[in-house]
Length: 132
Image (cartoon, rainbow, N blue to C red; front, top):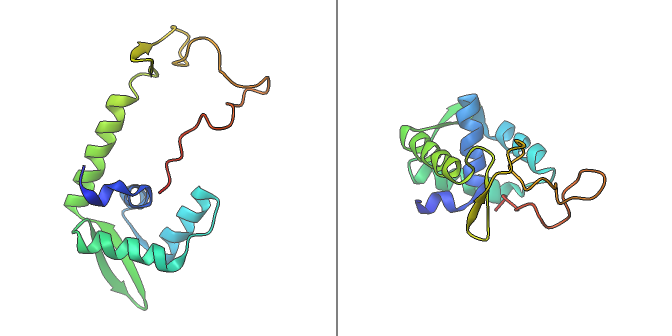
């Protein structure tokens, strides 16, 4: 995986642009903040955009007073490669437990027990943090 993809925010930003085609910087920032349910420091966000432009994964153009961003072919290829890599690890609802694939046939990819509390929620700490 290339260095630019080590950041969850970079991956998520590229996924947004893949979905929408192009976005103004403020719109992309607002969508990520909504997804993360937290504020993103503007300097950090614009640094992420600049790094992606400099690495050739995003195009930037000016529309009026706003910058508009879109994925380049290289950015799209990297995103789709990462999506394929994830798909290989999250295969048909199966999961790996102690080195062996588990599929109990109930379609939830687990061992028949949600592992959560009575309310169906997973216990705290079981979900990975995918943000950077």
